[in-house]
Length: 299
Image (tube, rainbow, N blue to C red; front, side):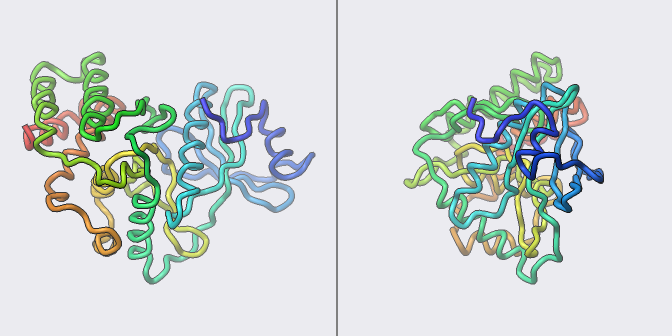
């Protein structure tokens, strides 16, 4: 496993390395929104503020994979901003991830247009000859398999839908009817999806629903909580439409910066079958109807 983030045996050791020896936390404010880890803003006695995520001791691997994803996004020219990862580690009964605190300002007047163009640049400038990533990571709390495959449609079938369906069967969340329906969809993927363009697979955020962007200090969009891998850019855009969607100006600006292939809108729901299966596995049978609805549409 790559560890692009320094690891420490205590939060105090991490703070000493990040800020200064002997510094301490003078205050902490909890931040809502996370359903997997608890989040907060630490104020140090030096006046500096840091963002912290905490989980059980088993969460350290998840934090290291998140750090690797943020590091990958940070180096792509023109991409939306991400918080700088500072440290990770364990302290007694919890694991932690320390990051730069991005204080939100009011959104700029062209927030959505700038965001759409930046995402297009991220997809266009971050490329790989194969789909996947150099390590597995997580989508929410679920393992996400990223072993490389050259063909995008094979990758989406095997590493995304097939894996989640097997997990749902093993947990008795997918009955025979659902299994057969989703299996029919997998058999038809070659007739529905399109391959990545000649530039290769795009670097994807991987979990870009509306809860995973924030407004940064300059009023710009910044992206957080990634589940990165290289794949077809349509998969990222599909996720932005789940649970409410982004402003229409975002999609217009993206399409102006890098026009989508014909039929992208018709393929969008199919990409979200992956996320609905994952929600089924994470949160239970209340998502079964959504899985079935999408599967029927494409079977």
